[in-house]
Length: 110
Length: 115
Image: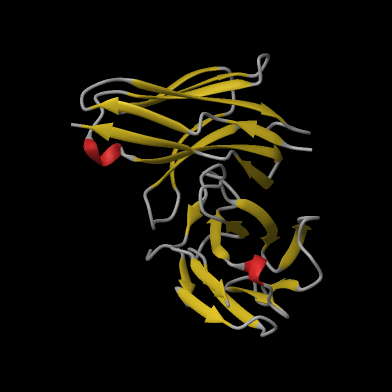
């Protein structure tokens, strides 16, 4: 089976830094992606890691350790608009079948 | 490029009725995915097309669900004899075959309510 784990909720204040972790147990692994979803909206792509290490995209960074089956999304200089749900997703086969985690709801407080 | 579109945005139906949803992917994207998402959960994979070929279907998908992509462009997802447990958001996503294949572009979804 496929299993991804994330914290269900995280709360932080504006301007802070927050890290959302994701651990996975899947039948295959071709990369870890992160998506943001605002209430009532569609998931939007944030970041992708195919190899170990850190990927940085503006205020967002994502990290992957394949040996630990672990990754995280780092959000810096939090803004109110970052309040949303964040999902990690694993591609378990090349070109096919992304498996999503249960999501982490981030609340950014003033 | 107008993004991925889905119709209808909302569908309310009575248990036992059939419903059909449509997804129009980004025009140059060859891969198309259907997902189901319930409140507080992540998207759950249903099926995947490359062009007109349905290459994978989730074992969780019952025989009441069928999807098509007849000309390799738009896709339809049909649910027959709907049940209350089918109430969910149905999301469509597309990716190109080459290049940026790891980014899925999602449509706004069709919210299904089965009474």
